[in-house]
Length: 572
Figure (tube, rainbow, N blue to C red):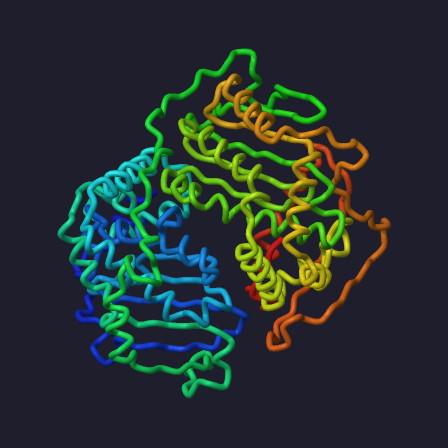
């Protein structure tokens, strides 16, 4: 088919266009820009234009630098900023990559206090950059990133063909034939010289600093012509440039708190595929443990033959959703756990071991996925963090997380109208669904003592529901379940108190209408959501519904969006 349709297209030997030069000259650098956002947000971004990096794909020096500046464990910029109560998150990496120039950026999500101390935040960033320059490139850091990159390419998960083809078409413009598949992933060579060259661009004199905050309203003097964004621009003073240029890990502000990340002990080296027991069903999970405190399900991988495992754990408890206050407490607890776990989950993520924590409808969910070789090590550290959460919580962290959750609730009011429509439908149908306004009211009166009490009650009485799926033997699945039970020591909950997912039953033949105004008055868009309740279904009826969805998805989109142009977002 490819030859039939593409062979007749003549090859005109046209070279790709080039655009020599850089959009940043001396007049555009060493600038400080203040921007007024639409949403309630506070952030600072340091952007450093530099040479093109596409030709350095064999070494990927920008990945080396972003790994160190962006790491979140002990000795990191983010750890120190969080300890001071100045930041919630940090990201670093290339944010522009063109054929003739590129740009490296460091972005920090600030707290209120961090916004007031933004100059000190920037000084800490440059103190870490000074540490990297002083220490020089470290080959062991390169070796770790190259090993993980090779693993990621070797065991890539399958993608949708249309997405994969589009990705490869782009790669064909960037890499030679032999590296079209592997170019975005693998690191072949250690290039300390190019690491030093890119580091030479990360200076105060070669920086554009952008601070975003609602507090700048009324204090700006420029308006961006396309979106009407209000902003102001000023040259960074000579004194400030000198201060940031001399930033040091030994300064009074930093106090020697910055360092390289610890060596990663979670990088897998055993990729053997487990033999599946003949007695284990291959098309459905098998229940290995069924007690009043734990149910463990096991489903070995018999499709992909990858050295990876998925672990899904539910701490089933009514405490997560029984009231607006309990829902907010569960959200705070989850985010505090996520912060406590950052010191090892970042290293785990670098080794392609991923985990997440969430407040779900039936309790607290913990998900772990990645290479099975070191997964039990990660699970053990997560459970230690769960057990020690109450002991490690301090007032600074509680205040920062409470502020972060409040901002998340406020941001919801600026979401797209279709998201608000989904929310309205959930409020009408779900039994334990609370309004954002109720959650915000509950959050305002919650104290650190409330979170501590919630943590103790949650861990005192719950039922563990566990699924182990993938490259794991029956014995390994049981060992993982044993880790959870031994470390958490749950007490059996009262059966009648366990939450169940229920929805309101709509009367057959009736039409119900729920109207409410769009939360964001400046958003002139609207949304209509139609829900048709089918009721309880079995496997056959679910398959029929899936087939019906397949039949109507494209015609509905074509008619409502393309032909009648009734909306931009249309889906079934």
